[in-house]
Amino acid sequence: MLDEEMNVTEHLGELRNRLLWTFAIFVTFFIAGFIFVEEIYSYFVRELEFELTILGPAEIIWIFVLLASMVAITATLPFLCLQIWFFVKPALTDREKKVSLAYIPAIFLLFVGGLAFGYYVIQPLIFHFLLSLGEGLFETMFTVEKYFQFLIRVTLPFAVLFEIPILIMFLTSLGIVEPQFLRKVRKYAYFVLIIVGTMISPPDFILQLVVALPLIVLYEVSILLSSTVYRRKKAKETWTSST
Image 1 (tube, rainbow, N blue to C red):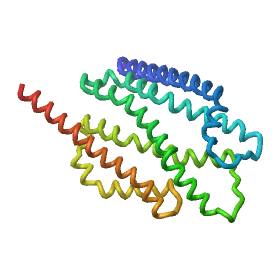
Image 2 (image 1 turned 30 degrees about the horizontal axis):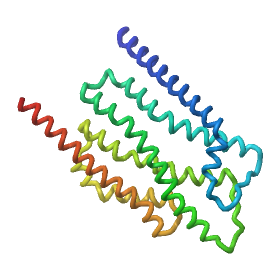
Image 3 (image 1 turned 180 degrees about the vertical axis):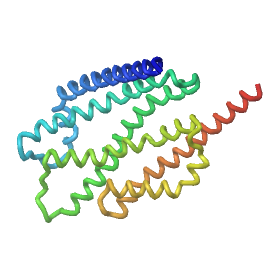
Image 4 (image 1 turned 30 degrees about the vertical axis):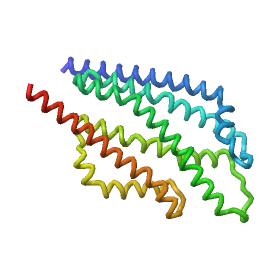
């Protein structure tokens, strides 16, 4: 019993240290983002045809903190994944160690790719559609807070949803998910993804389909990748058993 308590204490201590290291990296990138926040802000508003306004001095610090936090979260993600991998590494087999470690750079790249896709592809469609609804009726004026809340609402879900293929591959490699199951629940997955698409897009049927279509494609890509991993896994198991 004493040994078990010591093991638990050691694990908790290790987890705390890894979280502290991750927090230190986050703070470092947060400071870097805070230093370059003016350049980052200028990049995101470079194509706007109107000036953003603020309703109070608190919005100034709000946008500084928001942009610095987004930089820190994105840059810290691979380090966080690596720390999690180091923490669970002793409980993994050699095969699981190699498989899980290979996914860390893919997680980061897909997260950044999702952000880029949401910002450069989906966000302009939704933004210009919404502006067209009020053309000639209203004077266009956005506050900094409202505009960047809109950007986050549109882009961040794609950063998360772009992780679906890598998550499916990882679960397949561990034997938790099989491609046959993914095909079986395809229609239910489509339904959920369409709902997600309607939640992050305005109430326009065509635009909702445009948003939902990439999510459906991601699911189909996940099935293909799962099938590839599953075949390789079965072939390796067959080869191992025959030898």
